[in-house]
Image 1: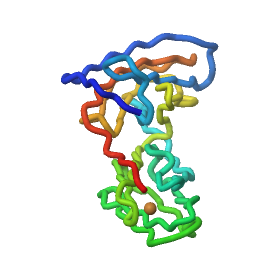
Image 2: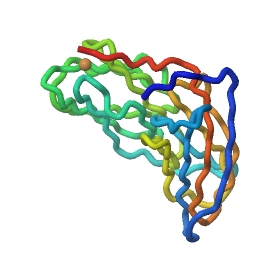
Image 3: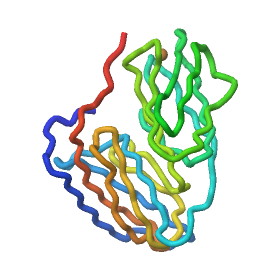
Length: 208
Ligand SMILES: [Cu+2]
């Protein structure tokens, strides 16, 4: 996905509208667009409650290598999540991270390494491959179970968010810094529109 013209300022506009039927925990759809109004995919969105603490979690995740590309490009997981790295290619990969929240090294392998990687500290982790320099992906590790990544049409659906006040944070590889906004979640499903400024280049390159 290409975004060619980028506004200089960090512009943020959030608009909330109530939509659907009341439920115990409402789904919150965050619709992410850039300064030109184009849908932004691969934006990681998470909600942290202003009162109380988010329940602990940590599930299982997976990041595949397909056609010498990490799929998905952006993942968001809760602290404690075990992520496996299935290699779907005929060539071997060597996946690593030098990022402080999780330094690891999965030496040259085919198939799926037997031990998943447990992301046990919050923060941003960049992934690379020693063999294929252009391979790049991100794992954002957060201390909340309420998160999602936006799809091609810019929508990130955060499911079953209990009513209350939250800090909503949005991060994208092309944003200079995270965007934070306080939002009120009601009993009903709702949609939040968020405008982000993509001022950094896309660092992904095509490989051979
Ligand atoms: Cu590789």
